[in-house]
Image (cartoon, rainbow over the protein chains, first blue to last red):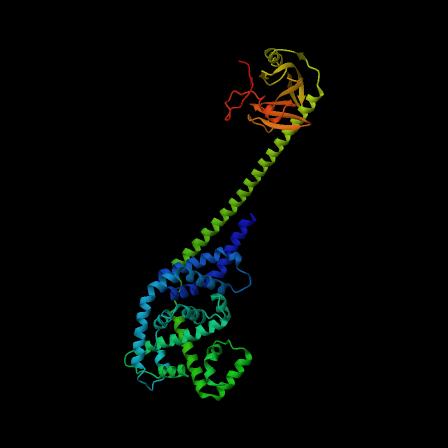
Length: 205
Length: 259
């Protein structure tokens, strides 16, 4: 009888902790899988895995981080290979398009401040730009900028040193800005800006 | 601080991940370096933009997913409940096995006690009530209501009947049949009823050793036969007459029941 009661209590406790994380999990899963359906499957897999291992969760520690660790692990183990294979050709194609845009724009400069230009970016474009990041950078950017985890939490979730989190985040964000710049520059009637030049100068330095 | 190190501090600073000392040092650098200040300002706006846009564009988990998860949690919990129940059932089954094992242990202990008692009584050489009967006479004598169970007297080619008497094996009224074999060997056969099935023996004869005697015990329905002798293990096995039900491994027996 005790076993039955603790099962119900366990479920209630899990629901109370996990349900508020559901939107965040789903939003992240969408960025990871690029598909509604895969995102749902991923969240479902991770969610039920978490429930099955809930007795392993150390009470009092960060449940949300624990849940995201399971999500990313599930993604890496189950979905990453498929997604990688499917998006490889798309990704490299897009990359070359981006490269073309950049090479075309980098020759010109404009007086317009870039933030004014970037303000016009749509949410959809920001999310698309995140989606195009290589997976290691994308995971760190998702966890830091979409889920607002600390470096230490991200390190814990991805099972990498904090230093690795910092370097991936740096490169991920810089790449993301590059993608966003490409979107902004592709917007008609807007002159190119000097961000690219600034960045290339900085990269050399 | 050289501006080259800006990259190392930029995001940790903006993310609030710089330790106090580093933060103070970085801020004092920013106060004196316009280039770095502008870059930090630009990056901070960029970060804010990205986070804001990403948040605005974030899609809530579909209601269908939420419902599916609720349902699956319910299912998983139910499954666990069943598994808890089946664990309980397994424990009960385990207990039953233990009980059976304990009972088996008890029954085999009972057999030992009956065998021991039979051996002791045989060794005491009680006086016989009927002497030098034929097998038929002896069966008739036992089976005229003296006992609640039927007694079959084995016919041995190499051992003659000395006689018989009523006796007890522990709490059970029994027939005692004495044979004389070559070399002045005495054999005693105890026949008693074991309706409750307390004695661990089947139609397959079991050989025991007790107080310097060898015994062989077998069962014919509710009736248990224990033959006590000083024959060796192999020889005493051969003293078991064939039962009505055919045995899986036919034994070489120099004995038979009445035709």
